[in-house]
Image (cartoon, rainbow, N blue to C red):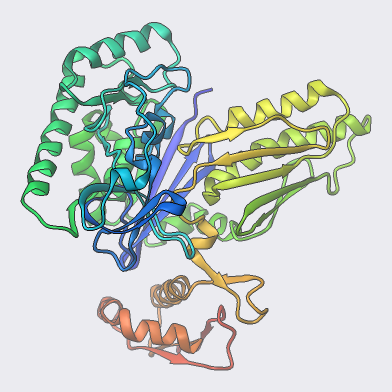
Length: 505
């Protein structure tokens, strides 16, 4: 089913935020903070520091605070791994046959030596105590194709279902693809001419040649290539047949997006609009409230039932309950309807919260096998639009469904929260940076509402310290913009997530 996609972009002094709506419902949310560097997709010249035969892995110095982890399987040009390196992981079809010969088994000690310099790509950000993961299976994503410099495989996105179109695009890729390199045709290439495909491929080959040249004339550890930023990826990956409009807040980011659109997809230029109202875009569109709700464990369903999401270190559990829904006919019908609504909402919440790893869903037990199959099918269908690869297993007789979703970064909740010091780290509160940004936006809201005297805000000492150390420039800009004096005061009596306004109107 076609989904009408609307994109909202907001950029301020603290972070760039993107909210993607499909059929009027928030489907995806992601952000990049000005103080946090994104490394996923970057290519580094690294130096092997340690070989660990016991786990068939090596540690590689790529110039980051912690050494990267390189598993032996990530040294092979295994096509199943390519999808993890860019934002369309459904590129590879499981039924496709690889054109590459199987490689003989080898140990990490056979393949690498300490002190050896190698070119690697970072595909998984550090999560918890785990450092980043790297691979030698390098990929470069364009709008229509993905170049695989270390592979000979040619494939077509499995999201292109028409066999005739798949064969047409595969033929083009085989004919015009660079010799000795692999190529994957992305979903956006559907209906593309040979000339358009060739232009995209040539651009990627030129990019790889530049990377290769820089690699030859550099010494490890060194960053060789920086992956495109959030806005470039947004334009590259989300402007397709489902795209309706993009609303952008902020003239600078609007101009930047417009440049990307003119480069990657000029036909969509008329669909990009600048938001000029005084009220912030995310508040006006009701997005702030929806984002805040993503921290809640409990999500209500239209029928009156609800789901409960709990993230742990090992896995994520999702429990389905009928709640206050009692149905009108019989128990089986009540349970079936609740489970069907839950399946759709679970798929949406997994995307929104960017939950990865092992996921166990406890659906309400159903007696009729056909109903269990339909619930599983419903979940599968709703996850097809997900940009992260998911594997779903059959629903058991107890109503438990096991699934995995590719995890390349922290989930949304883990990214914006930290262990709570008030409950012996059993729960979570907003992270220091999240609270700092919240406090600064509160100041701006007060200023925008109008005030004659100084704006005073009392916050937790750690938040006040963060503002003093890292955000004085932003405070200065707010004072100049609104013509007021801003005072941020530390108050040890306040809860970490508490903000107290003390301003003169």
